[in-house]
Length: 163
Length: 394
Image: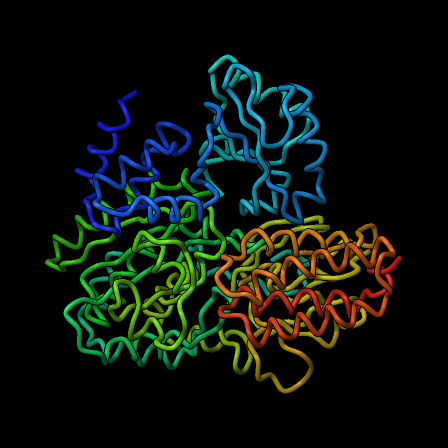
């Protein structure tokens, strides 16, 4: 992992230092760090010569740009109507039961954060969730245990890749 | 088509894309005006849900003089119950890329973007590969055009076209006032055509087969086919390409589970149609002579009698309250108040007549909210509360 100042500089070199490059840079930091710390927002503001309030204002607008410390794997369970009808609650219970955390919390070892999210666009394969950028669909409590075990051992089972 | 299909299926969108090079080369040999006229006579309307005539959009942008113009493919598919655009981009990406490049040719843009929602990050790599192959071919035929992917970060509102521009400019995704419209003042303040993924895929079909083939499908004012994302209480959830203009009762006969109580047409921002109105409702754009026509981005969510409409509305309002950008008061406060209001009525803290006050609040939002999000909350709110009032109270 690169130190943040270096990461921000690299991202700015790659995307540019215009205002329109802000989002890709924020996303790049989140990809490595999983969230935007105050320090990283200061660094980005300095690198792009923007008021730090602008960086903060933009970052906090987007639900995937987390601004508080997150775990290595961010679990986002879809809570929108179809997933909620097709058993989102059981899925959440299975996750909570296995990881011993509630929604919004991170495990002690900093490995998992559990969140809910709005429609992931997999309503026909509900219930669905994201772990980082990987999509998992047609979930059942059994499947949850299988998927999470794979993450616990850092041997990740791939999710959905096509439609 | 199997025997128990009641609604007419079609197969254009996902049909092979292998001839994209030919379609691109042949179309580039025609004049921009010919292509625009082809689109106008096909009567293709925007498939994202709003239904603006695509040919006109291209024409308006093509007529403006500007050093820079842009084409943007809106792949910020966030409407609950919609999942067709991802399927298009993963199965026939070259159709979309060809359409973007042809739009660029027609309006005089050298650059196109695909604004892809953050949730579809996993599509990015394949799409990038397709883009480089596509750009390589463009270079070969000496057509100078670039396409970039811009990733979203989990904000529903960024599917609203002007919010999408703001987001691409590195700002909060807050919708702008309209007018000026994107055709004149879009990304970076330049004339911009922004089309839904599916709309672009249809233009490919039209350029390939000609306008007539498309126009002959569907009904008056609602020509062509449309992809429908079917989910909820149905034995066959999935993506279907159907002709526009079908009646909702036919749709339910085909896709329902024999116990369908209501269908949400057009996602959370669309309308809920109860069983008694199925036969009076058709799926298409406004202007049909008989019955109610509901336009849609293609989201069809079916609910059977085991579902509580209160829970459905509660879920939608939570969604809107979270996704409201917070810029204008009617939407920011309205969504919260509607949500609090229905809960208070349910708990008996407010009388049933309070629902009427909430209905009038929803109407106010419809007139005063700045963008489509705030304006359309009233669609689902009003259609659910009016048709299932008892379920809101007891």
